[in-house]
Length: 304
Image 1 (spheres, rainbow, N blue to C red):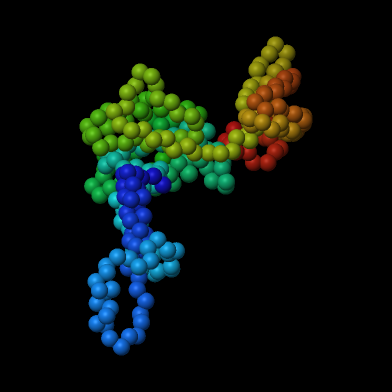
Image 2: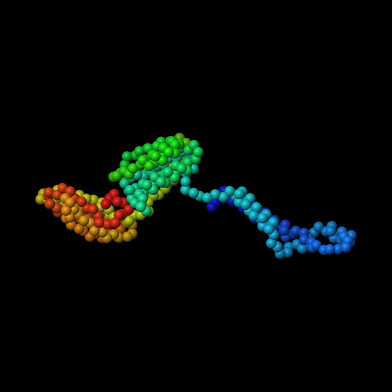
């Protein structure tokens, strides 16, 4: 929590001790039963405190006054909390739908998590706010443009599909977003992606840009290459597996099938960030090569 007007707390430091001092200096007299007040009139005229600066006794009225004072000072200090959200009335959401967004995190794909995040941002739009949805990865698409219809925005977000083989082109999407937000000063750009986002140095976005990262797991072992190359007397098979995990090594078994029949099984030990290649000669009449990995489902099943 932070304060917009922290100087207001000085009031508590000044007013609080004054309230306590008033109770310490409060006039204290003891009740006595006398036959006549005639001889006590001069004493009654004494308005000075009889016992100042004594130990303060518990007093509910004092506590209540201090509490009210603290609440008033806190209200004047204008406390607020930082939250990750959208405040602009013109919002441009860029959703990464490249192939890597098909990775699985906690039983859901990263693209599904990105859609959920985008819908949350749309729901935070102020009254009269509008949004544009840009899907990047492969061919860029704009399923919804500058609309305030929340149902249309949700349908546009849910209609975004994974682009197999397409890479994220954030520079192109940001160029379009820059043109859209330049029309309204109260604009914001939200990027939802699983990669580290950097704005090109030659591109100036005339609005605040927020990045919402998607994805946690990186323990993915993939078949990064599978090639069957014809030769003079036969064919050469090339298979490459890559461990994309940043730290943990991976021990896997890779079965290679030729025209539906098992050709060989390879035991692979892949160090973090390292790839291992297999080269083998196969008969010239082989037409179909399959290498289904015999390992548990990785973060990105599309490359298995």
